[in-house]
Image 1 (cartoon, helix red, strand yellow):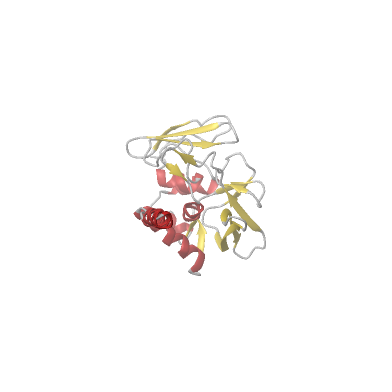
Image 2 (cartoon, one colour):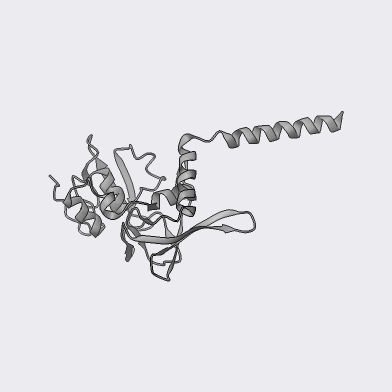
Length: 222
């Protein structure tokens, strides 16, 4: 009887684990499909937003705005892959090259900045956020010229849309921005200083702490 009881218990646990594995949200399934497309389709992909860094071998997805170098949105990329830790098969970072260049870039994230009460970022999601099949012109075809100019300079400006901010500055870390539907997005200049970006009811910037001595102009986009 003990053997039968143990067998039934193992089967029950296995069924629960299998059921949990099947209960992925539509969003999770879509992210998996898109990430597999990026890894295996052979299509040309591009950087979906500006990416700040210092050391190409360890780029942090938090996108600190005071770092000295920027990979521009729309740059063509190749050799995208996920790196795994052999011992436990855990993802450690995303690797990619700028098309035609030998330099390998490694993109990481930290749970410290990329989780909140609603969940945590995954490397599959980070990949989908970072790479797009659209060229720069396709990404920005519904933006006005002032927004495009800001994106090319890695800046933001009063009146910019949320879409333009995402392409210029990337996604706000989950630590302080629960949802892109929030009216305030929080970014980081360095390890400590925050940058607050506040949007109006039309999802356009009406105020930001970036507008200071070390920030860009606060001129209004009409």
